[in-house]
Image (cartoon, rainbow, N blue to C red; front, side):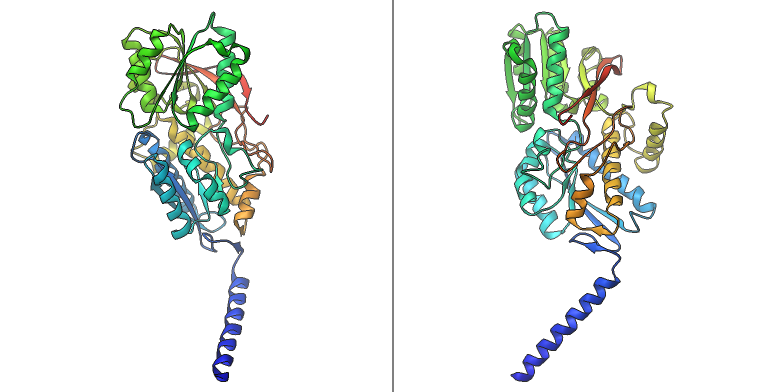
Length: 406
């Protein structure tokens, strides 16, 4: 028995010594999901379901990391990008994120898409202390480092975007009577609350407020209700499938309000074209990215680099789809964050670096818009411009407008 105890103790000491030598041989400090040779990143996207038009974002991000790996990786480490389909279903998101964290053991989650889906994992990833970075949703809740220090947004927040629309309506539409179509979840509610705040004492100008569920086949009945309310303004808070449906239906029934469309559905290829270009003339939305259908960017150096990337890494991709622009911009931001980590690829350091960008110029953001973060500011992109649909593309107008944290 004594001999056995001695054997165990000796083995333990040898194990400690071996572990110490391995640690000394490593180039840096690591948490699960990172090593001298690899960084594992987890991601979810709706490759199926009602929001599947966003699926190209995940595939484009995958292509971006392929480019990075072809160039030698980040500080000598290759990116292993694991992307799973959640179908835009919160219970499925919980399932696949647990798989990424507990089985795949990723270092972090990056650009998981959707407000209801990210809401479903918000507390879990923060309890697990997993970096949950640059989420693909503009809900204002992602900028709350005091309560959720492991989750950070990316794009301008929905609340402020809606405030901007409300103020523009009050300044530009005579005797405005507003009808609101809203997706019935946290994404829709965030926009609606911001819109009401922007109207202030004029909130009574909302004469009709209707909702839909993502499982609904159409929103035709809601559009008819809005027309019948006598509204002359339509604020459209919906994902591309329903945004296209609703604008097309409005035209079919002869309703011609001034239309404001939330930015997340502002894609020409997935929303405006399916709605019918003749039906969406004059629609207003917010913008913070260069749109590839806007000819003013044809000779822009950033757009040229993006088109070269598209040709090489996304040859079947639609070069008119701004989702590919978004994917490139957010991936660049994550790329820069990981580079700043150097050889300290711990989760704490990753969050520290994500929260220390100062006026970072991210390719394909509109001129005069940069990205900044701090330990108290988790709203990276903080400004937008308004744009109006004309012909077959968007036309920017007005000044750069500040968003939430500013």
